[in-house]
Length: 150
Image 1 (spheres, rainbow, N blue to C red):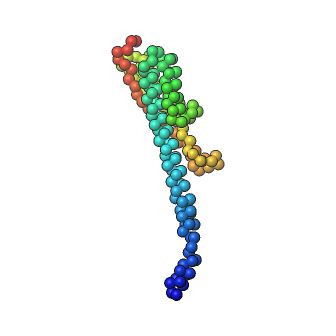
Image 2: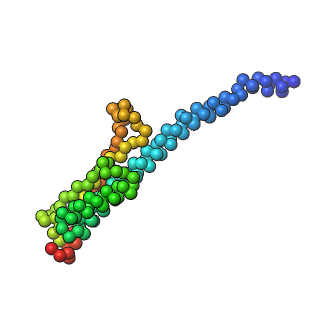
């Protein structure tokens, strides 16, 4: 008889584990999923901006003249950013030469890439409190081949 009374006294706790589990999932797992998604997007941006700067510099130094080289470098940077899921409005690339003219054998060319990565699920009214974008930058210095034709 005592066992039956103990079981009936515990009936007041029935179902509370389900409520606690749902509460913990919402409280812990949803922010964790958001954090993983945000970090993944930022890491993709970091890879994209680094590869874009590298490819822009290498493409420019391998070109035959400055005008064609600049166009090819910008195109190469956009292709890399597009491959990582970013659009043309998200960033850009600039080139700076150590010598004049730029493609002087033995000189260097610096490619600077910039990418704005939008953070997911941040509404517009929160942008004053939480930044809606993170700006990533990368630089790459490419040597111009010493044995190229001037």
